[in-house]
Structures are given as C-alpha cells and as structure tokens.
Length: 251
Image (cartoon, rainbow, N blue to C red; front, side, top):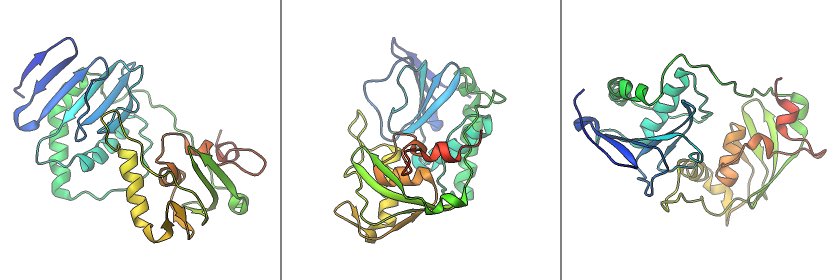
C-alpha cells in the first residue's frame, strides 16, 4: 500500500489515497471530526472506540483516527469495527444490532484488511489476552422486583421481565437532551439513544413516558433513559438498595 504523509509534534498523518486518511495522536486533538472513527489505546490495548467523539480518551497513550473513504458509511463501519475488534479479543460491550448489506460488508472487510498492517504498528493485533466481561444471569424471582433508576436527571421504575425483555414503567422521566462532545456534536451513544426514542415516540410526551416501554437489554435501558455514559447494571437499584449487578453477576 502506497501512501504519503506528514509529521508534526501533535500527530502522524497517513494519506492513503482512495483508502482515506489515518491520523495518530499522542494527545487529545483540539478538533474532532464528527464523521471520524477514533480508536483509543492504552498500554497497547484498545480501551474505547467512538464515532465523532473522544469520550474515553482521558489518560490514553494514543488515539488512531480513521477518516473513511467517501464510499463508506461511518455509522455502519463503526458497527463493523466493533465486531472485528471483538474477534481480536477486545471487549467492545456493544449489544445493539445493525444490518449491513453484503456489498457494504465486502467493502469494509477489504478496507480493514488493507490497513491492518498499519493498525498493527499502533498496537492493534490479534491473539491478545482477552479481558473478561462480567456475565449476568437472569433470575426469574427478580422479575417482580421494581428496580429504581435515579441518574443524571432521569428517574424510572424498571422490571427485568425475562432474559431479553426489560420494562420501563410509564411515568419515567427521560434526560432531555443528548450530551455533546467537545466539538459540540452528539456522540454515538446519543445518536443510538435518539434512535431508540424515535422507535417509541408514541410513548413519550415532554420527556415523560405515558406508556410502558419494552427494551431488550440493560444497556438499552440506560441509553434510552440517560444516553448511557455509565455502567447501567449499577444504576438499577432494588428496594433493599442492591444493584442489579450485585444480584445477578456470575462470579
């Protein structure tokens, strides 16, 4: 792969012609492109990836910015990348599903294979030691427990009704606006939260639920109520004061 580039005291730039541009930063950049994908690295491991934001970049060792070719849709490739990095052994903690056409998938796979040698130079390699993701088991006895949420202005009562169904009861208060990045744009979690709210628009009036809403995961509940930003397993509290994590984590 041929490329041209430049070096400054802030970044390395690789111009890959038809494959777009890759930038590498050792410190958080002053400006953030809302269409760029940022891979945040610490101790030679990925600690976060973001679309159009740098929410997980504090105290990192380096940041890789992918400015994609024009024939690639950033949101779609972002989802593809979460799955690809999961196969590398990194914990991406992404539970939503997205359908990508086979044609687009072929384009994304070809792009990733071609830039993989460059990514390896930054530390993105397969066969790393996997980090263990906490596992939670559904406990039928908890399906009748009213878990409360009180976080960042949101308030709700939530029931974990079945393994893949959580119910947010009507009367819940939703955070009004998605938080903005330093660049003044809505990040990926905010976009996903707004998408969930659009899917349940009939149940929302003035940021209050007027009907129950059924969602598929704890993460969706947090994204729907307060646009994520925290571990939602720790925000659902039982009447006895225990978190849903405490009651269901597999040790």
